Image 1 (cartoon, protein in one colour):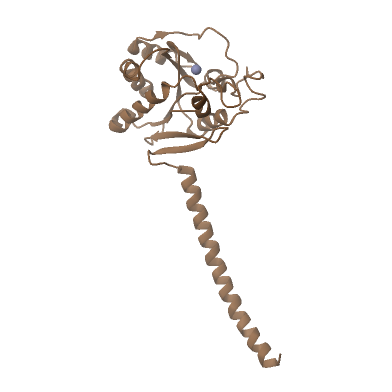
Image 2: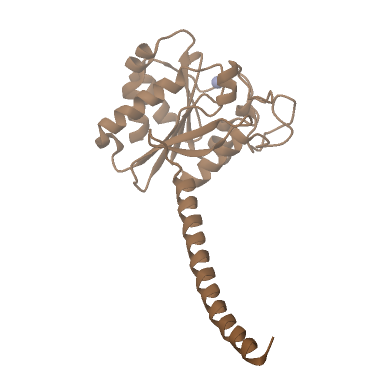
Length: 258
Ligand SMILES: [Zn+2]
């Protein structure tokens, strides 16, 4: 190679380098833009029904929330933490549809609804999740104690971690957990008056205690330890969606209003 060729090659190299740098910057910008879009999409993760993706169950099923309103105060409603209590899901979904139709019910609040916290248990028809853990005994409450059914340590399960994270993320003023089959309104933390009004409206029995110890439960964690008003709404064992909706529609509105 002679000198002129080297010079030529050198000059071409500089141009090429400049072009390469420009392309690299553009590519990097495009990549970070794409990553930004992906992270926004992931954070919002909203599907065609307007539900936000919170995470996945042990078996990889999606756990989603509908978030309505954007007010300063949040309230959280969830159902089917026990997979063999399926009626809570269509009940809270019907309430979600009602809130969409009548946004005045939000009263400037943000309402977060998780219809199914334990999709693996729902698919199997079991109280526990796919690993045999009762998620409502797996929270980081002071009274947590390990066992095969309560889990090896607090929030050992993806589903209980997702709910605990949602509580931290949305910082709800109060929480409503929908269960079955005791046909009553129970509460933990500063929720006695709210529970009484919900029971009175629905005709459900007001029960200060569910009658047995619940170490590691959400009531122990959120109600006792965090001091959040936590309502446990127990649907009847045998009831149709129309029946529970008729009885509870107003009580659910009372819960949102506080
Ligand atoms: Zn339950």
